[in-house]
Image 1 (cartoon, rainbow, N blue to C red):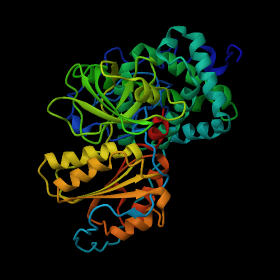
Image 2 (image 1 turned 90 degrees about the horizontal axis):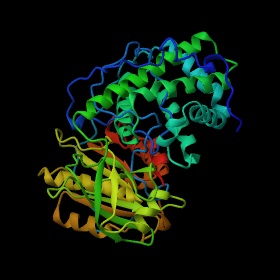
Image 3 (image 1 turned 180 degrees about the horizontal axis):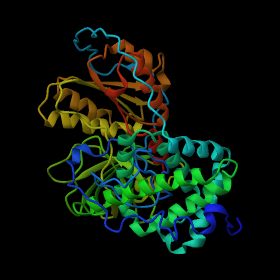
Image 4 (image 1 turned 180 degrees about the vertical axis):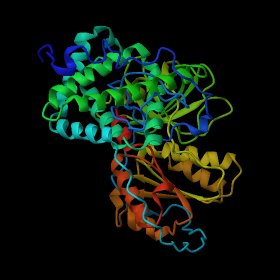
Length: 490
């Protein structure tokens, strides 16, 4: 690509002289909330990219960050664990007793008055119009943005990984994710706080944000020229200014209570199959997290390249952390962890994130669907329920392509033998006689259950549809962001 030439907002004035993109020098900080209440929204993508770009119009003045987040200038970090499971579950395999939990009949639903459609803000209209305009040329927009950023601000290049091929897609995913929630302030704020907190590990500082905003506006104005005008530019300026301030404030809060990253020593490495390893690591300082969450991992072999992996156990008294990692084709981090890592190696961990955690204030049953290495957080949830001494029913469907892919089935069956409230059923894709919806209906009903899904994006999409079809409302179905899952592999 030729050196970028710019026009309109890209001429260097936007975000420059009048301070449009300049955040407050002293971000407002509030008392950190309980760690349990953090990551409800999708977490940022693995390596850095430009921040998600869209916020509700209710974001007019900067928002004081209630929850910690970090402050890099990049795209959402994958959130859930990379896995290798079938796109859909198949017929259950006979493993353990076929037990149907006793349940009360589903309560009759009373008709609810239709809620008025949410009002769309003027800024949301302009932002989405821009997104629609650039959609056909998204690759060019993203490439131009990075060229502009690195030509104008070469000092920022060191914050990004050496290879930028996967980076480009993450910028677009971040934009689309934020645009999707532009009028949903709570969801978007959670998303940005997690994004900010997770990006502290990249070394991003508040003074980096104006450069990113300037180059973002430059790229948008160039490729959305047909719909670009002063009002559109002003809407994007307001949106980005608020987004960056939320992230900066959240990072400042997080800095008071947690490091930007943790060093962790590999203490055991067990190869379960030719491409799946179970790693246990010892952090250099206490690492607080909740069962069902995940973290980002960087290896010494690929600096500045991070991938997300779920914790495979509930918090342990010895402080050790365990991960299940599947090596995927061309996956830098996953292949390094599976085939190169050995006891004594040092890796880095980002902060914990994810909302797929157990609500211990209720006694609802848990319906858990884990595909491939997605069984890791499901196992952690089972341990969490056991450690709380609860007797709530937990039903686990463990999906895999072949028998060999059920690499952790023995562990799950031992848990079943120890806990009468737990049922584990294997579902193997190559032995399919029924699809996931039929399997769920066969073992239901599930009206009084909270559902948890972890696995490949295709499995989660089909799983969510199946669960909703058998009567589980969307607000009782928990999984981490599909956008993050797509970015998590590697």
